[in-house]
Amino acid sequence: GQKRMKYSRPRGTRDILGNDMEVWKRVEKQLAAIMEGYGYHEIRTPIFEESDLFIRSVGETSDIVSKEMYTFSDRKGRSLTLRPENTAPVMRAYLENGLQREGGITKFYYIGPMFRYDKPQAGRYRQFHQIGAEAIGSSNPVVDAEIIDISIRLHREIGLDSLTVRLNSVGCLECRNSFLGILRKELELHRDQLCEDCKIRAEANPLRVLDCKNCVDLRVELPVITDYICDRCREHFDTLTGILQGMNIDYELDPYLVRGLDYYTRTAYEIIHSELGAQNALCGGGRYDGLAEELGGGSIPAVGFSAGLERMVEVLDQSRLRSGTGPVRVYFVVFNSACSVPAMLMAGELRENGVESSVDLSLRNVKKQLRTASREGYDYAVFMGDNELEAKEAVVKDLKQGTQENVSFERISEYFDKEGVEEVD
Ligand code: HAM
Image (cartoon, rainbow, N blue to C red; front, top):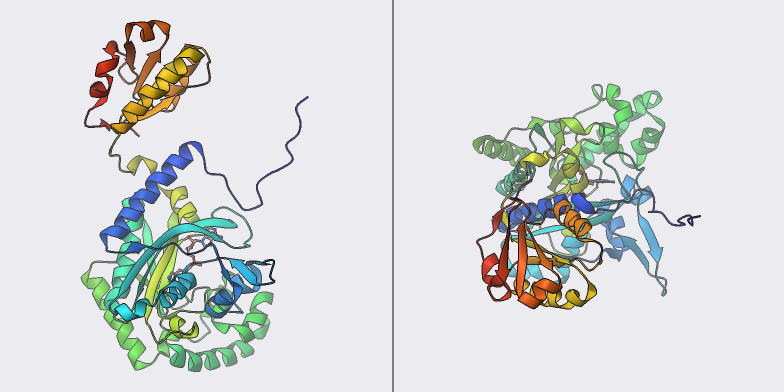
């Protein structure tokens, strides 16, 4: 009998292939184009970084650092971590490459895998992908508005609506500290009502109690951070909401939104989608004016967001994926092995002219080869048999129309030299 496969994917990871891969590529391409359209440039940082980078930035008591990091030592005993997020790496790269000397606002975007030892469930994986943007170098609330605007555009572009923007201000390092004192005292009074996790959080990271799903009932009795933020944070927040209204961007104020990463100052926001259930955040972000300093740089304000690609792809309305014109795609049906090389040479010639050509080297019967060509959505099949080689004339079948004609080898490049065909979804 057949041998049993010994290996399977690590828990919480996925293979992307087949039609899913096509969807992913198209989504990634469209989203990257939007980023470029706003003047953001791609940055690629390493998949792993010094563990300390995340401990310092995301925060020792955060869920991410305390229980979700993939940390390992290399052969020299250095502690490294697969990136659980990319804001800290981007800021590290900004500082390390001396970009603050250029002044102005540096605008980066990225797309790629992140790793968190999360409990796998719908919309939650251990390797997942984010697209994100970071605007570094300005404290102006207009930049917060641009970031929020981009993140909404990304979701709209791929056909997602019923989006809600939830917005809050978590204050700056000073005003937050005084709020934390008040919150701690208040939590002490309600200690019996806290869930087990929050009993610990109440001391170590009291803000996190505010967005705990188990402790929602208690929230109404707790102080609200926006009542305690300082005048400058208040002004920043009011200016931002004014700009959003001016840009016709709807939002809901959510005084309990605090985000799971410690680097946030002032603006914190999420975009949620009604269909996503418990894991309903498509995207999250905010301002992190203290991060550069925390990493040993100067005082450099910044704001950004990241969106989870798995969640976007799960809810996206595929019928609304914009179809464009793609290259002509040709499939060479090869009758026997003597015809393989001539087919490959001709396919090479077509590729030079921008035609996508694939040669079937399976030596299966013609019918099976044609079935593959149709299933994979090729526009044309070119038959390559002994007769065709002898006559120096190929039989070309239009797979969409079902029509067929003879085209001499000399004319074949010219024959496919068309503007491109409509892509059908
Ligand atoms: P985050 O809220 O931790 O923020 O993640 C952003 C998004 O990544 C989430 O809204 C979700 O869509 C996706 N995501 C997170 N964890 C998982 C998971 N285990 N499986 C699938 N998707 C997931 C950040 O990462 C910040 N770096 C955002 C930011 C950028 N703040 C400022 N700049």
